[in-house]
Image (cartoon, rainbow, N blue to C red; front, side, top):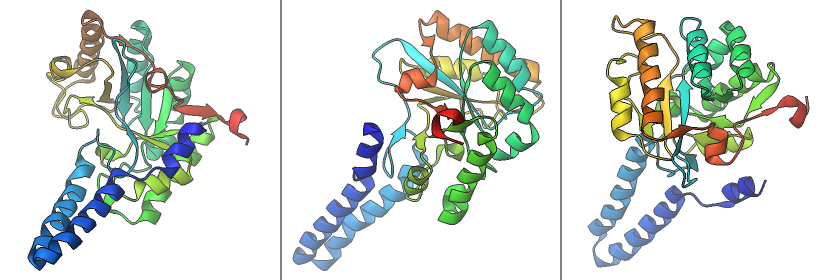
Length: 274
C-alpha cells in the first residue's frame, strides 16, 4: 500500500518537464519572443518520442527491470494464449523448472479459457495485455483504453484471480495510461530485453539476439503465438529452449517476475473479495 500511495502522489517526469519548459519559455520570451519556442518545441518532441521507449517512466511509473543485485532475470510471454504454442511451451518451462509471466489478451482469454487454467495450474503468473491488442490503442480515446483494460480484467476474474500488472501493446505508453491503470488497481510492466521478433514473425536467430544483450535484472519479452514466415512451432520452441539453456550457461537464473520486482503480479479473488 505504501508503494501505491507514493506512486499516486508523485509528479511524473512529464509533468516536471512541462513546468520546466514553460518556465524557460517565459524567461526566454523576455529576451526575445521567438526564443520561447525552443523549450516548448523540445518538450513536445520529447512527449512524442518518449512513448516508444519501453524502459522510460516518463508519463507514469514503468517497471522494466529488477534491482535485486543478483544474477537473475525474468521471462514474460505476450499476446497468447494459443492452442498451438501454449501447451508445448508449458511443457518446456516445466522441464527447465522455470516460472514465467504470461501477459494475455482478452479476446484469447474468451476463446482459449482452458489454457488460462493450464497456465495457472503450472504455477505461472498472468497479467493484462489489453483486450484486442490494438497496436494503436494509445492513440484511442481514454474511454476506449479504459474499456480494453477493464474487459480483460473482468474476463480473468472469472478464473479466480485479478491481475495487478498491465503491459501495453508493443510496450507503448501515453499520458492517459497512468490514470486508467490507477483506477483499476494496476501498475505498468514493460521489458528491458527483447529479440525484436515482431510477435514471432522473425523467430530465426531469436536466441542469439537475446543472448547478446541480456543482463542481470532484465525482464525478457517473448511471444506466445504461432510463428509466421513459414517457421514451424517446433523451430520456435527450439529457440525458446536455446534461450533457457543460454541463460543458465551465462549464470543467469530465471526467477518469477513477482520476485524480480518485489511486488505481486496477480492476486486471488478470495484475497480481494468477490
